[in-house]
Amino acid sequence: MGKRKSKQAPMWIPTTDLPVSPGHPFYTRLNAILDEAGFDRFAEAQCQAFYAPVMGRPGLPPGRYFRLLLLGYFEGLDSERGIAWRAADSLAVRSFVGLGLDASAPDHSTISRTRRLIDLDTHRAVFTWVQERLVAAGLLTGRTVAIDATTLEANAAMRSIVRRDTGESYQEFLTRLAAASGIKTPTREALARLDRRRKKRTSNTDWENPSDPDAKITKMKDGRTHPAHKAEHAVDLDTGALVAVTLQGADVGDTTSLIKTAIMAAEQLDAAGAPTALAELVADRGYHSNQTLVDLGAVGLRSYIAEPDRGRRSWPEAPEAQAAVYGNRRRTRGTRGRRLMRQRGQSVERSFAHVYDTGGMRRTHLRGHANILKRLLVHAGAFNLGLLMRTAFGRGTPRGLQGRQVEAGVLDITLGTLVEGLWALGTRLWRIPQPIPPVRSPSWVLVRAC
Image 1 (tube, rainbow, N blue to C red):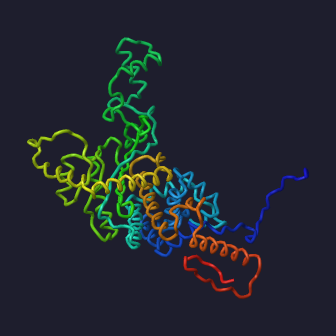
Image 2: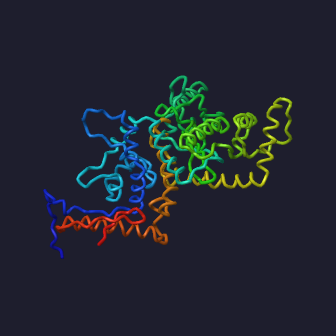
């Protein structure tokens, strides 16, 4: 004791001395599902046009790039810096993304550049690929879809907004108003009093954020006024799977964005090969309007949209909407309509909680709708993979194994990965004259017959 001295790090390390991780049981099973379905071949075929045929600086393989984005959902990482740090820190994560101990983890700038180079349609194709796996497993029907929206805090500050017409900052604008009212040298308190007397102080018609013009000023759910985006989900009420994700400005009304999300949901169901087409649409009272109900009825969709209390209705000005409104009212007040409303609250809010709260996307670190939507689509695909993993593995996230009673299938996978890691370590330390053939257990984990 008391005689320990600092040691110089060795210059050369034998590969037999490198640490070996058995891997996380959840990521091991997820990799088995992705490999069996040919995810890497699919990703490379989709991203072939974005990679140069001439060898230059080694790029990030498509399969590894999308696994890193999936990691952001499963680990609750909101930024690409956090994803890069997690991939460099954890041996289990390195095994999941296919990084050997002799390879360095990708830097956050490499992940960001790869995201910018791969277009939005390719990220949507990956989202559709996951939906095809759900259809094959019977976890996506698509007949009844619920739609709701939430706000995402933008990577922009209120102090950075400028006038659209003059380019003035908010402070410069208030100083000019004070000078026009006779205050030559206004103090901060005087400017604050002048600002409080003004009506509708931060309208999106007059102000914008130069760092992110797509971010719109709105009131958040916690009462703050902040630039934000509006994310809208379409969820299959039969299974809870995410059918479509759209992104708009926070100032876009619900009745305006509903049609776009419904069209996107119908296109996604068709691309994924769902067994049934979209037939019923459920939404809350914020989406109710005469024109919305008329448009949904024109395309053959049965609406279950909660109706706000507008008093006694009169139809001389909109007689074509009377039948659509009364039909929607009759359906929502029925037994099936009330049941669908309860399911809507459970399924849609669950997707918001998983994707944005525990998934780490409530505050965006990217700017521009195209960049944010790329992350959202892969996040939504990871949410759907969680449904698939819950059926095949018993848990939908890696954190689901914490503090839970271990099931037989989970124990089998855990022991299998541990035996495989010990076997790999043993073959490095001792020479075995004849290798023992591997045996695949019923839960798809490679174990050794020893």
